[in-house]
Each structure stands twice: as C-alpha cells, then as structure tokens.
Amino acid sequence: MIKVGLTGGIGSGKTTVANMFRILGVDIYSADSEAKVLMENNKELKTSIISLLGEESYLNQSLNSAFIASRVFNNPGLLEKLNLLVHPVVREDFADWIEERKSAPYIIQESAILFESGFSSFFNYTILVTADIDTRIDRVAKRDKMKRSAIIARIEQQMSDEEKLKYADFQLNNSVNKLLIPQVLELHNKFVSLHRKKNINGKI
Ligand code: ATP
Image (cartoon, rainbow, N blue to C red; front, side):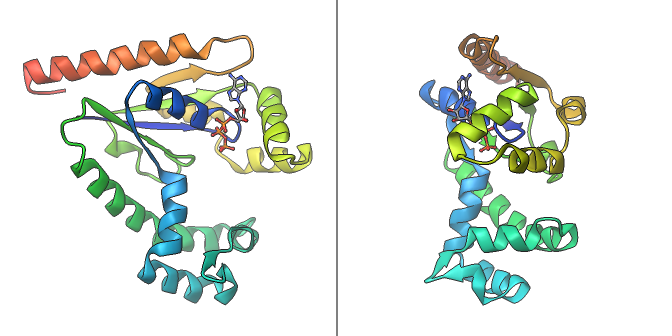
C-alpha cells in the first residue's frame, strides 16, 4: 500500500480535493476531524486535556473547541503540550485504520499540519494544495462567514506555502483559473500505476 499525505493552508481546498479522491474510491483518513472525535471519546485523552487546559474544555461531555482554541491561540508552548497529548492517540488510531485497509492500492491522510507535525516522513508521497491568498480569503469568508482580518491572522500563523512546497512531492493548484479535476485524476493514475509497479518489483 502506498501512503499519501495531503495538506494545504486554510481555505486552499484540501477537503475538496480529499472528496474528489473519495469519489474515485480512495479511502481518506481526515486527521483533523478524527482528532476531534478522539478528543471527545477517548477517556484517557479527555482526562489529560482537562488536566492541561481545565474543566471548561468540555461542555456537557462535548468538546468545547472554541474554548480550547482560545487557550492555545498565540500560546505556542501550550499548543505544543496539547499536540503531545493528541498526536500519539491519532497516530495509533491511524495505524489501526491502515491495518484494516491493507489491500488498498493507496490511501490518503488529510491533515492541516502534515509538515508541522513532523509526521510527513511516514508517508511515501505528500501533496500540497495551493491557491492564491486572495482566493483563499474569499472562499473561507464565504464558507465560515469570518472576517477577512481573522482569516489573515490564521494564514499568518500557518507555515507559508513557499516553505511547504520545499517538502511536498506534488502540488495541486486550486486557484480560480486552474482546473482541479484533471490534476486530481493525473495524480490518482500515478498512484495506481506506482502501486502496480511496486507489486511487480516488490518495492516502491
Ligand atoms: P480548511 O483548512 O479551512 O478546512 P480546506 O483547505 O479544507 O480549508 P475547503 O474546505 O476544501 O478548504 O475549501 C474552502 C472553501 O472553498 C469551501 O467552501 C469549498 O467548497 C470552496 N472551494 C474549494 N475549492 C474550490 C474551487 N476550485 N472552486 C470553488 N470553490 C472552491
């Protein structure tokens, strides 16, 4: 099985791209949404989060994402401590998920922090979804009814595309003047043929 990591900055279109691969029959593990599920349902993790950030981290047993985000926003030390609790649990869950899909030609993990998490070396290939900044701001403003200034603040907190491009094996350009579907199809065909070659040669 070929393991592919998919990432992109806020509003770049990584979830849209993940959905296109899903339509092609590819199994997708969404690290960000699975992390939320685990933070809500994994008892040990829940206890550690309450110890780190306080009881307010959960409201009526549900994850209080707004509170957690406000605690770690602009507090890199606390964010790192939270990540040290959450990431190992997500990685274990992902390992179990992969185990159940051993016969798949390839799978994709979608993650907003693929390169920042230090987990990208686990993948055989990585894909970065990009779009110009103005397009990303417009799309997020429309989707989340967020103020432009708040979106810009989020973008500034993330690793830049220029930096991420140094690590990515493939780029999918999702700017307004680019057609996304042919780019996704090309990559899909590439991964399928790489898997075939791997089976013939016994290596990747
Ligand atoms: P986030 O990191 O904020 O979750 P994301 O990278 O997953 O964002 P998406 O949610 O896939 O981005 O896309 C952001 C918004 O832009 C969505 O509303 C999506 O429908 C829209 N969008 C994405 N790609 C395109 C496109 N090529 N044309 C038009 N709208 C698009």
